[in-house]
Length: 161
Image (cartoon, rainbow, N blue to C red; front, top):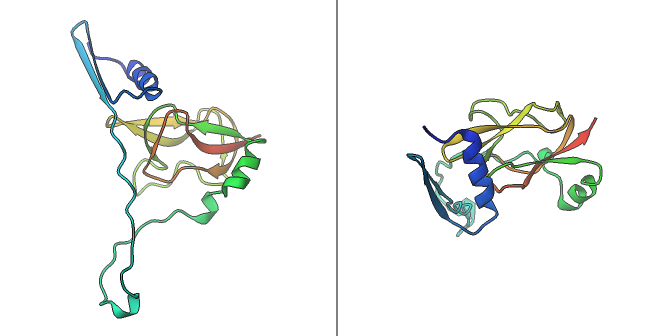
């Protein structure tokens, strides 16, 4: 008999508050190993010469977040007084959509209902749909797509309504 998803999530939540990097649990003929890895640092872009003097080359397209999706830190702090945060229930990687080709589950300004899927968090190769715990309007998206999240970290700010 294998561990069920609820048990695995409980272990992950418990470990997220510790400095433990790896744990293995064995009981009644079942085994579970949880390993915490450090996210890779974001790539650093540097220019060594003016672009005009460099030969033309193909540059891969990079999807940058829309400025309308993020709110300056000072505005975000003011918003926290009138909004409710949707937080990460586990450690993992935050995804706005089910696949790169799919539309995001929610966009800035969308109305969400309690129980509506707002994002996915990938943890240990499992895709976990994260549901809103509040109904209202999304006023801020605090995480970029495909970035790490920690347990309890705020991902969205929702104005109840």
